Amino acid sequence: MRRYSEWMELERPEEEPMPGDWKKMEDFEKLLLFRALRPDRMSNALSTFVKSVIGARYVTSKPFNLEESFKDSAPGRA
Image 1: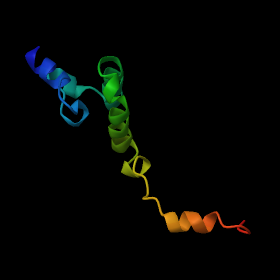
Image 2: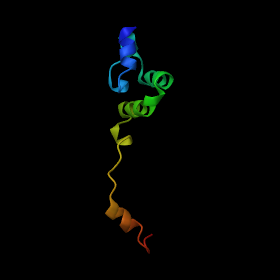
Image 3: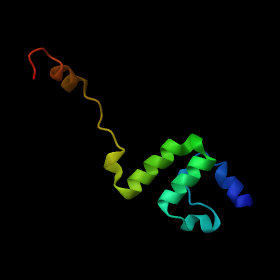
Image 4: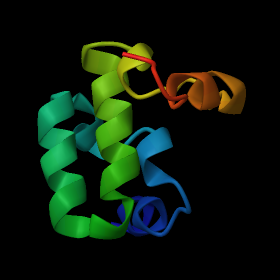
């Protein structure tokens, strides 16, 4: 029980292995556990889930390019 309590109080528990037999849980089950026990970490846990299931490119944004954005917003551009 102590290891579980320590894990729950970590700053980023979604990046650490779960204690005991909980580490054998499927990724989606872990996500449900985060939803129930650490809703404050849900968005990070969801990003970790998406990275592991379909890839990091679905959670990584391209850097904003102000120059390209300005060109796209110029009049006469279709």
